[in-house]
Length: 316
Image (cartoon, rainbow, N blue to C red; front, side, top):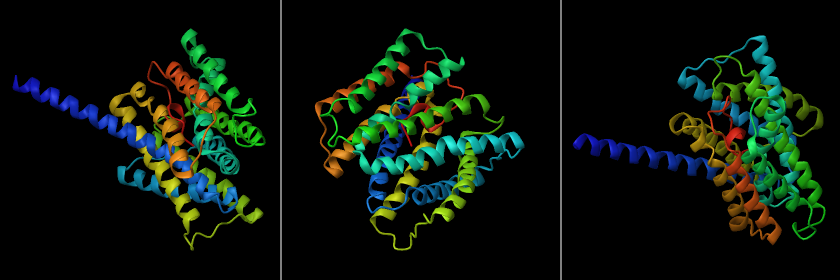
């Protein structure tokens, strides 16, 4: 009896711990949208912001690898893999994100980025990496409906021109989805999720440094005012949330971890309202409901082949 009681107590603790990590990581990811919005408030060039975010992430992930004594594959195929992921997962989407979010409410961005799992499933389905089924097809339809509600009705966004920026932001989600599929097909043997992200951050830095130098997009963080603080906070939260998700997938399983998408989207909308005073039209609230329902229907039923932030969450 005592052993059974201890087992129940241990199980309850494990469940509470998993929920705490899920909520903490999801809220952290949702907050990155807010801090990204604040970082672009003074007009810093997007390339410079992406460079610093990538550099901060690379340093933190490098420390994690060093402490954990994990190996980083450096063969030819691995280097090509990192380079492709650097374009699809960092250089392109982050630059577009920093550009578009200056023109969009945080809540709208949080809804649009939640379409990543749906786009990933569509690509995987087309390439024969996954199966759709009626339930998932309905989820894809709900996600498409959510996007239509954001960009189509004239009254859904505060300014008419924001519909175009919403479409541009969908390229961010599409790029993350393409990265997911590429990882599922080409991840190097023996490379864990942290090593993959570290490798692609290093590759992204190699790409971004000459671009920043050529365009004069360098940002001096020495003043460390609110925009610079927001940039650093976004980079730190992204890495912390990512590591939390990796732990969650291993400890509680991918299906439980997939629920982080709800937390990311809802917290992003909530932060936009609470901190920036955003107010949304009824169309946006309906879109939020559709995209959350869509996430429910397309979430994985089995352990996915690759586990990245964008596989299970709506993270940048």
